[in-house]
Structures are given as C-alpha cells and as structure tokens.
Image 1 (tube, rainbow, N blue to C red):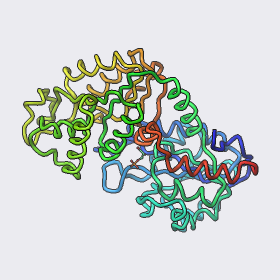
Image 2 (tube, protein in one colour):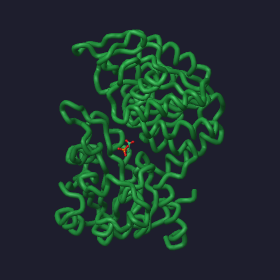
Image 3 (cartoon, rainbow, N blue to C red):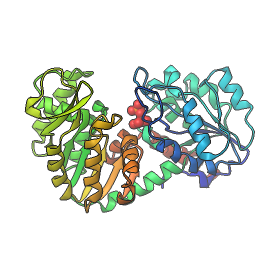
Length: 403
Ligand code: 3PG
C-alpha cells in the first residue's frame, strides 16, 4: 500500500483528529437514523485508538436536504454500540469545540457536530487552500495527528478531508485500509461481462463517472434505476413530461448524449411504481403521466434486469432502486439485491442504503465486497485518484520513515 496505516504509528497519549463518514439514511418524517452501518464501521478504528484523545468529525446530509441534521443521535448510537461514553459538543470549530478538545483525557472520544455547519466544509479546495481554511487553521493546532477514514467521502476535496493532512502527519483508518485492500484484490481478477447497476439520487455524480467506467472496461452494461433511471427514460423521451428535478435540462442532455455515444450499453426500466394518494400503483413506462411521482421499479423491470445480472462475470451495484425509506417502495431495491446475491458473478455492493437493505434481507454473506461508500467507490473504480487517497499518499511520502 502506498499509504500509511494505524500500524505505522504509536499514537498513545496523542490527540488525534479522526475524519469519519457517519452520513446515514435519515427518516424524512421522524428525523431518526434509519441505518447505522456507517457508525458501526467506525468502531474498529476507534478501538485501535483506545489510548489516545480521540476527536471524531463527520458530515451528515447536505445543507437544505432532509438528511441535514446535527450529530447528537449519532453520538448516542455510537455510545450504545461501543458500550462507553461518547462526549458530544454542539459545535464544530468554535470556542466550545476547542475547549472540549483541550479537556479530553487519554481514552476519551469526543464527537463534533455536523462539519457542514461550518460553511467551508461545503466547498471544494485545493489541498493547499484547504490548509488555509479556518477549520484547519483553528483546529489543527490542537492535534498531533490526523486519521482519514471517511472512504465514502474520499472523492470530496473538503477541508476536513484534504486540509488537515497538509499540516499533520496522517494515515488511513481501518475502513480505508480494508476498502483499498479488498477492492484492489477483486478488481485484478474481475471477469467480463461487467454489469453496473446505478441508482440513487446523486445524479450529477453518477453521470460524471459513467463515461470513465465504460471507457476503462468496468461497465459493459449499465442498468439504471432510481432517479437516474427516470433521467434516462426522459432522455429516451419515454417519459414525456418534466421530472421537476434540479438542473433537469443539463442532466437529461448528458444522459441523452451518453445513450447516443454508447447505444448498446444502457438498460432502462420498462415498468415503474408511482405514489397515488399514499398507495403504490404499478404501470408500464408508457402510461406515466404529468405529475406522477415515480418511486420504484415494477416487476417486469426486475425480471428483465435479473436476467442480465444472471449472465454477469462481475456486478457492481450502487444506490437504491427506489424510495427505499418508504416501506411500499422497497420492492425494487430488495429484488435487485436478491438477483445480485444469487448470481455467480463477483459482486460489489456500494452505498449506505444498499448496505442497510442487504443486512435487513440477510444477504450480506453472499456478496464479495460490501462498501458503505457510494459515489466515492464509483469514482475509485473508474481509476480516478480520489482527493483523500492523494492526501494520504502525500503524507506517506513525508512521514514514512518517521512513524
Ligand atoms: C455519501 O453518502 O456518498 C458521502 O457521505 C458523501 O456525501 P455527499 O455526496 O453529500 O458529499
């Protein structure tokens, strides 16, 4: 590995900044955390740091969306999972956070509030400029060391992900170490045909990665689901009325040009399910009318996609196939996961929602690699260097002999 890990350093008695990704699915109505897998995953790294003063930092949601919340519930979940006190401060870089960090004792863990409360964490920076942000300049002086373990956000060049590593010796935590080792092993033996199943709602991220996945031989067929499926249906003019999503013209045009460039690669849904007065109603895509809220795949699409999946050598799936948080729109996601788990292919399942769904269905043992990362993993598979991995590699060059 070109990066350093926790085994390369003795961090006993040191104050350590640990960037985790505890960004979890949140119930849009109650605000409760729906799947705690990303929080569970942090434990191994935190146990490895049991003799240090540990400050954990994460984002949750995006400013303005339903999942943008504080981290107090995450602290409670972590406390229960670890069976020990987790201190929590409702602050990120201000005096309250700084005092809480200064008062930590060896063996204590403090969770900061949602990093995106600090405006800077919502922007991308070069590593050099990230190191000049208030977040990094104010906090880094309180730390001896930085552990980067937020693999799901490794594709963001936010201050907490690329800035601290500029000014503090930094290494990967256990999550990043495991992800890189497993993925590199799997991808060297991956067989064709490669089937990629893309869903979820982060459309620009996904569209950006598709071309690279096709061009580097990682995607022979792409089965689209979820919101991105709707965008492709619109690009094929099979949905006639606007979807009413952000930057619609731009994303539909991109999907249209991808279909034009790679006409044999994409499979799109043939039937879907909409929400009608709180009920699930299934229909052929030709029957969709203006204002219909498409929230899931229908059974014919499941049959069509399952057949394709059964002939795959490698399957990579990222993002839910529908509005997974709602009970009656879980069907598509569950059925697709079943087809993936029962296939003979080498399988990679990616993203917080799918990881939660797999666990609920008891299918986790049938998958070769499960990653809580979504967009970051898609980009990793394209071969692109992720900003966090670059930060870790740069730190390894600086500190390899000094551990
Ligand atoms: C994710 O869930 O993909 C990561 O937490 C990154 O979140 P973001 O796409 O809001 O940056």
